[in-house]
Length: 138
Ligand SMILES: [Zn+2]
Image (cartoon, rainbow, N blue to C red; front, side, top):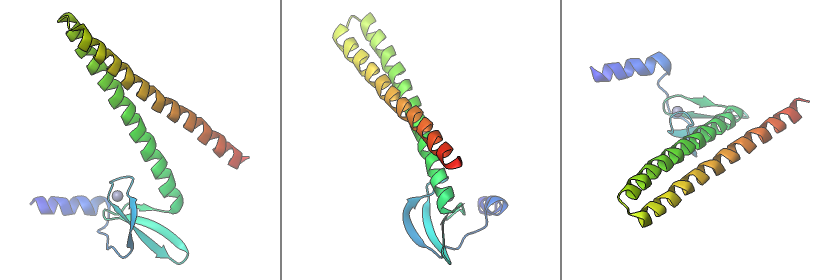
């Protein structure tokens, strides 16, 4: 029964894919599966086991989106870590363990600084990407 559900799910969205290409060193931006290199004449494409298919250009766009999504995820994780450690520091201060509380405050600030550095990288990178895109369109 579970096998039939799995087959229905596969057939409804993606065809079952035969792996005729060579495995590449790249992973699928959508499912993180192995990408196979397909040569059709001079055209090179990448396809994963599930069936996600990329041209060289769409692969680059998908990688850009994947990196940006993961960096925003890292920012969220660092800010959450900072908040948690800050709460721990407050609890330690209430217990008059000022030495450890101070260490936790420093660690909390360090997490926030890392998040800010990644945010700046993303913001600068996005504005530079927009400049490059504008230079190609004019
Ligand atoms: Zn995939």
